[in-house]
Amino acid sequence: MLNNAFLIEISETGNIRKSFTTELFSTIFLMNENIFSFIADDFHETFSNHLKHVKNGFSSTIDSITYKILNKSYSFKTTLFYTNNVFYVLGLNPDNEHYDLIHEFLSINTDLANKINALSSNTSLQPYLEELSALNSELINTQRHLAQKNSELERINSTLKNLSYKDYLTKIPNRRSFFTDVYAYVKTESYWLIMIDFNNFKTVNDVLGHDYGDQVLIAFAKNIHDLALQYNGNAYRLGGDEFAMLIPQSVKFNFNDHIEFLNKSLEKFHPDTSIAYGIEAIDHTTVNESKKAEETMSKADHQMYEYKYTMKNKNKN
Figure 1: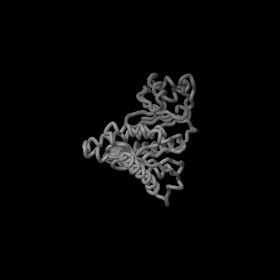
Figure 2: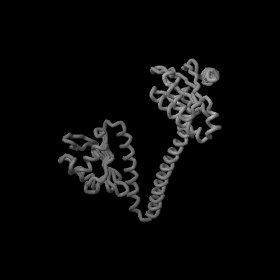
Figure 3: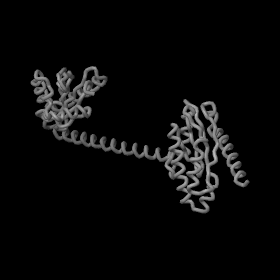
């Protein structure tokens, strides 16, 4: 925010080249082209003198300068500094929490610059100073290169982490993601755990091929993923044709209301396919450090296999 700080790059005559403050004030600074158009008339001479002086050292600080921006007056402790043939103007509100730290940094570098300027008058030291300057430039470039590589490495690691929590085929969260989430979720809220797999999916693979079966899995995964999101939950592929859903009990949700839709979505691929499912309530008392999620999953699985057995008998009759 402008009432805390601003940083702009200027030419030796005060022309504004870049602004590093908020987008709004950057536009205002750049539109007016010259820093003197913002400085109150009483401070023009002071600013000019410091601008001339700063080229001989690293920085120069003016205790207070009044700037007029959008018909308002702002008072800033202003530091001008010169580095790599570029002038910068840093305006800081003395109440800014970072002011003391920045001011100390600038003071230290000013002292170093002054010492180097003093040594540079000694011609016998000139080769050493030039070598030191070259080494310093090389160090800065190396630091920039390392920072860039570190940023790239962090991006790659983030991508790999995301991939490790996502099912390669269906692109929804995978088994690893499920176990990470379930232990985290139940610490603060109760959930419905819904275990799902397919009836007669082997027939689909055997008759129509595994590529076709993969398309069934992808389509079904999207359906339950979209369904879970409607109720602030999540869906997971645990492996094969085994899926799970976690839905907060705080939302109004009845899985039975969606069975027909899910079955019809499978019947489009093969008339004999349908879902089998089991539902269990979970919270921090049923899933925690001493009670593993697999125990509750086993109960839901038992319900699912009973449902599967019932459906098979029903189809026989």
